[in-house]
Amino acid sequence: MDVDDFWGLIEAARVEAADPSDPELVTEKAVTLLALRPPHEIIRAAQTLWDVMADSYRPELWGAAYQVNGGCSDDGFEYFRGWLLTQGRAAYEAAVADPDSLADLPALRAAVAAERDDIECESALGIADDAYLVATGEQLPADAFAIRYQPPTFDWDFDDHAEARRRLPRLMELLHTERGW
Image (cartoon, rainbow, N blue to C red):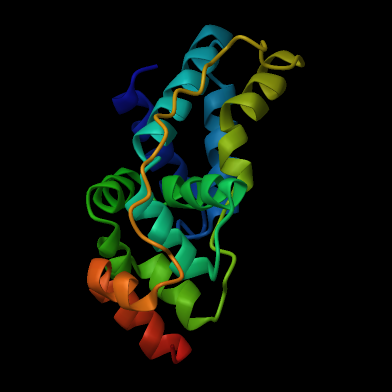
């Protein structure tokens, strides 16, 4: 499964989900759809998922997640990117290229307006694991994928709101408007 097939799976899951902005529903549909494929494709999907995740392992996006969620640990950043993955390829790639574009994402705007500070989806990281279990009754092989992150260089303090406003003006304006920051 290449990256285009992977994103096709996510888009198909979003179409089938009653609410495509709900990350848990999209994840469930993605697991169901992927489990219909042969096991070797599911294994390849695991590597593709982690390659996509590695592409988004960037300090600017981490800073945006930190602002949105009121803090963001290593795991929290993984789960935020899992949520972002369920929002589809266009949203994901836009946020990776320009984290400030998150301010334009309807699902994020709705979550911020609802005063949610847990914009994340841990279960999205297990799409291939869960699909493999459904399809075979077995755990995904331990060597099915490798996580290849490049260590990021952090050149700003995420708690510095003035710097966050400079780097993420639209996102910070949204947070200021909705949360009164």
